[in-house]
Image 1 (cartoon, rainbow, N blue to C red):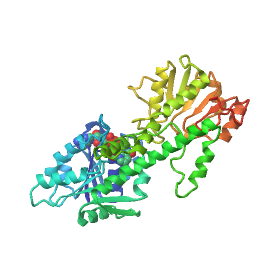
Image 2: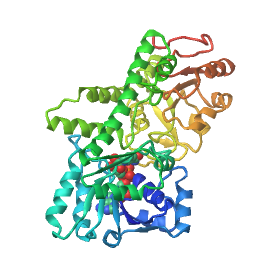
Image 3: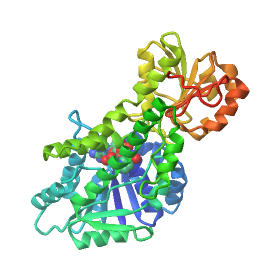
Length: 445
Ligand SMILES: NC(=O)c1ccc[n+]([C@@H]2O[C@H](COP(=O)([O-])OP(=O)(O)OC[C@H]3O[C@@H](n4cnc5c(N)ncnc54)[C@H](O)[C@@H]3O)[C@@H](O)[C@H]2O)c1
């Protein structure tokens, strides 16, 4: 099939490349001329594992092209995917202005039997409105259909998630549109759910909100473990083995960030409020998440007292590992709160090497970041932070504190490292480890 993908961001580029990999003829379109130039000249505009290989393969087959000309791409397509950003507005509602501007501008170019597939995450009701708009604005002869095919990929494993998803959701109001979606995704073997437009929109938002709720639940329990001197590891493991609960998203830490969970929850709360439905569970999820950095700051203050003369090495700036995306990253919030407290901050991230808007010194490697620091704080759980040479790190530091704000390190191994190198290890919802009290000393008390 000939497919146009409008919006070549984290979702659009993966979608375009993966559909080309599946054998479709794809054009990825973006208004950002620099991005299209980079792609045409073989330079990746984002960092995402396995994506470059898939892109090169599809380009070699002549199945993947890039353009800034939406009109040409749309008029020559059997199906158009819209993967435009839908960020939060001031009120928390999804800002759909860019999405509508695309719909308005491409509508006249859609072939009479075209299929417009909204892949962007949108509030329930949006696709029905788009369908109404097209019915009113296009000639009676037009049989353009609208579909919603929400995306569930996770940055960091986007390629794998796209090609082997847990499910694919086809929202549409006609069997023909459902059939066309089935055809596009035919090579992928996974459960495929056919439903209406609103149901598809709600499946996406409800799933993201539920996942975020699990994270906040684990964080809430971690705070209780801290207060009781218990370990969240055992609690989470014991909970996660229950198949009704499952182990994913139960690790305590600095909270969720990124361009999806925070804004999708805000949008769902705002949408429900318009319908006089109160989403108390989601408001609590948000409130717990907002408090995570304050919890970390409190722990740091309980150890160091005033932070004004202290130096911190921040490990990780991306909102999660294996991506260069820093949108709503807890690491940025922590950097800014430490700076507000007067502390000096040096950060290191394996792929984020420049952030002019963040007034923080960036170090070229993990050890340089720790030089002269009082505490190394792991805020993004990049695998390489688990392979640190603790002896070397200790030598670089002024004080020997490691704060694992993602609970990524194994507590028992860190007990050994603390004893061997004289380190002090703190995490969330787990007793702190010091050389004098290798098993359990709570520095909060
Ligand atoms: N990032 C994720 O992990 C993820 C996962 C699932 C769903 N989603 C949803 O997918 C959508 C896209 O997210 P994203 O992270 O890819 O956003 P993004 O900001 O990375 O990409 C959006 C792209 O659209 C382009 N664009 C803006 N206006 C345009 C126009 N008029 N014509 C052509 N291109 C235009 C931008 O230049 C940008 O490249 C959002 O609704 C998001 O909620 C994102």
